Length: 146
Image (cartoon, rainbow, N blue to C red; front, side):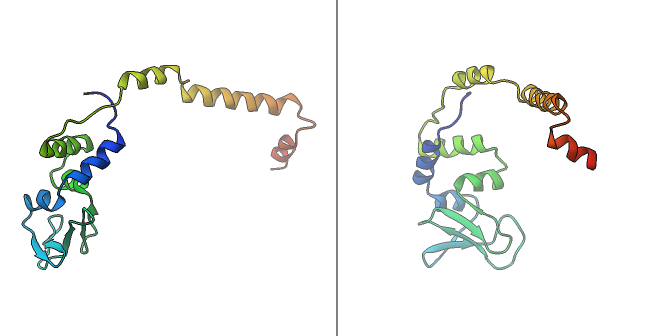
């Protein structure tokens, strides 16, 4: 399906997802105070340094520095692309992923000038300006001194 996923949908989706439930389904977590801990799934370790915060809805490993939201966890642990992770989370909470109109973006791209062509035209213009009045142009004098 073409089109950009709206940011407000991503924010709402992250608010609906229980990150503890998501990660616990892949890595067994143990309650430790207000948070949950486990051995980090992203590097080998003997003592738990991987922490999941249900109130802040993110994970962090104090050993390897891995951290992020439910989307980042799916991308890193299940090797998913960003859109795949969004679609997986949406499926888990029972919502459909909305898309912004991709056709409008294509029309905007057609109207926008090719950036390489634009840069070439700008370079040509400034080269012509340098040669237009070499005797009064301080840039030419500077270049000759170098």
